[in-house]
Image 1 (cartoon, rainbow, N blue to C red):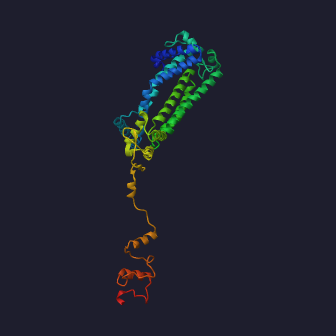
Image 2: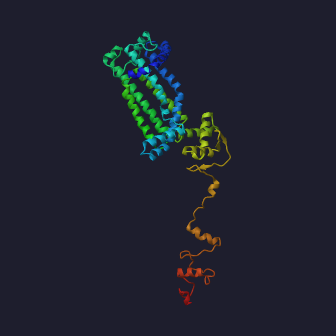
Length: 417
């Protein structure tokens, strides 16, 4: 780990300078040698870094959604060239190039944080060994070594021996309890963040291997944090726990206000948006207008939740416009079928008439004066139709029914008349 940290030594001085500047502010409030001063300095370092990484986070969201959109096409390529790995890779790269998608974009925030993480580890490790580093001189070094967070020194680790903990003026039991609690919280926050993404902000209509990979990472990452966390100093655990909490809160905000299309989060967002629009009679803010504009632009390609939203506005006497605004409409509500086809009252009139019962079919033609051939079950038994003697159909009907008004039965063969 020291070898890896030394590779990022070029950023050690900036990181140590930022910590020292925050320590100057918090030291004036809580005392320069307190854990609050040094701990809040590390927390503030995380906040500064994450604010700088917000553009990369936005790019990560776009890249992740683009990858989710491409999953059906990627699956087709895998099935088509499952026996030719080279051709499969070529087609994948071509798909990425044509769509302008970069799979590594989803890893940018983590990669961008790596130099700061290893630089902070190098700074805290130097403090534990009693070495000055960056802009941290001997006086600041002694102050940092005295700082304790809930009784655990800033540079202590879970794997420290009793003698090492005693050298930092701490109890090994206290150090292990504090570090264990922080490691558990760090792993749980990582698990919850990934689970929140998988259960709320993923298009449930797309079932691909990518989904299975994300589910595996949901369990792998927390385990990795727990395994490697026992070697992290308390200050690094503070850093990583803070960045996990920031990521969780940032993701909750994105899921609530800009959910993935087709996800459960989108269904909840459109339901809240419908209540707001119907209550105020208009969209408020650029965010709501952007969502409505995107839904209207999809047309027949809207998913189930988007069609339900448009239908709800129509029933409330409102109409969504292409520019994202909502106006009152006197046009009758237009419903949509599952495939997005509009169904109006006029379309309903063109539908097939209701199926008639047997008694309605029997009495209907008679009331209209229509002439139909009578079957055995339909023929009257006490009346003779007009022209029955001259009508072949009437004769056949009587012959089939076995009844004749008066006289013996007529011979079946016409030649015997």
